[in-house]
Amino acid sequence: MFHAKITVTLRSSILDPQGKAIEQGIHSMGYSAISRVRIGKHIEFDVQTDDRKEAERMIREACEKLLSNPIMEDFTFNLEPVKQSAHV
Amino acid sequence: MSKIKFGVVVFPGSNCDHDAQFAAGSIMKQDARFIWHKESSLGDVDVVIVPGGFSYGDYLRCGAIARFSPIMKNVVRFAEGGGVVIGICNGFQILTEAGLLPGALLRNESLQFVCKDVFLRVESAETKFTGVCRQGEILRIPIAHGDGNYFAEPEVLDRLEGEGRIAFRYATPDGEITPEANPNGSSRNIAGIVNERGNVLGMMPHPERACDPLLGNTDGQKFFQSVVESFTVHEFVNNLS
Image (cartoon, each protein chain N blue to C red):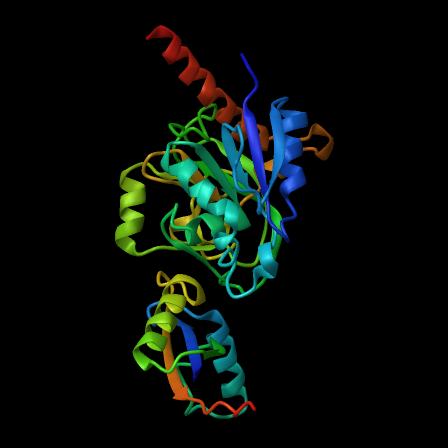
């Protein structure tokens, strides 16, 4: 089994007004060194397969068709194997 | 002339479905019924309205989950067969998610939910949805949305413009297209577009909320009247041939 962590963000060419607002807040804290704030979504789920390629294929399709809108968003994901607890 | 049959799709979270049904049925005196999103067929309809609201609570992205509702397969097939499909507000978002219209609706530039009357300039009076309007006519129509910022790549926008597929733009009461008249940051002040074939329209403003004389504004009737008359013209042409 795998555990997937997915990040969806607005494409870099698209203005992110939430990120801009947050950046202003950070600057108000005095941290002018922080810039290019982007906000996104974090999605996690388990994938019941031991085949990494198959897991990646499923995640990619889920991201392309549902979890992100390719017109305005990019996605990245990270896949970690999970040891299932032994059932007696 | 026989009545035009409108079908209004209802998702969990739709909240402009009754207004759309009332506008098409009670005001425009056509047939108008609801279609629950789990129904396996659209039934006998001439026009499908995908109404406004917050389908599935706007979870994930506006319209992202509604697009996978069982009825949407039929809506896509109906549209591909030339059937008239109207997406208003959340309906517009759903139609872009379903790939029936190009582009996407982003969060309003102001990050505010905007609920007010706006002025729309009819950019093309040649569509099925604007046929009774004059080119450049100004309509006062309400908007109510948080994610209505129309976005598409510049080449897509150029194509929409070149092919006369922009139905409405946000304008001043005098018909000027200015940044101040743009309530949500939409590219090139776009408020409504049609697909390549001209049978699918998406718009953020709510014409169904501007139909009843009791509410003091009937500009939205022109929208519904155009749709109804597009069928009359069709019938007329068919009778000639």
